Length: 233
Image (cartoon, rainbow, N blue to C red; front, side, top):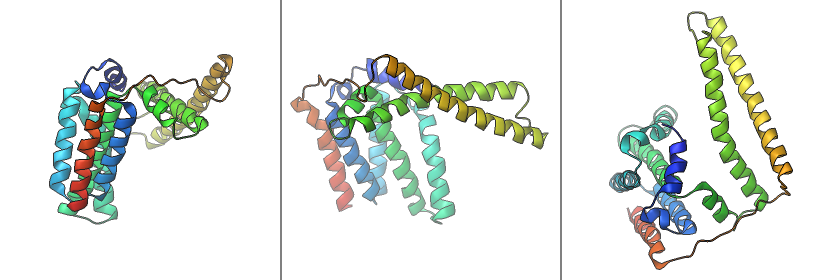
């Protein structure tokens, strides 16, 4: 799946979640993740996951396009729960359900909120320098991923990923990692000098044009209900 689709949906979406206040959505997301962490009720986690998937489909991110986002938490939670902790059965399912459900909740926030609004809301609580670093890191990650894909494709075309010759394969992997690090450093340096030329003085100009409405409280009410269920369950 193209990660750019997330940005397109967050900016051009017109659902009630897109129109909700950013600060309220962030608070509701934090509350839901806290509830997921402390929850021991598999049925409650399943209900939350089903709700999140339904809402993601409602904002036009269909289930098939959601699947790549769940592969990493699914794999690493299975690895952690089974091989490291030695869990099985319901306990293993609980670990996997918590990881994937948390990703669903975060994905719902990102898909329904433009990234600049998220960082603008965070600037009210965090130092401006830290928020600027997070914003630049977010932007650089996607640029770096595209460069890594281009580099890996070039190596693959030249036969550098062939497993028939292990020495050649290892040399290609080393070159691939080295080029990725160099491209990352170069990308950050370019971004810094471009910002300097455009008048960056240690703080990005932001403005908050959102107005709180009574209907914005609905995500928080839902988060509180689930949090109570997690505590009592």
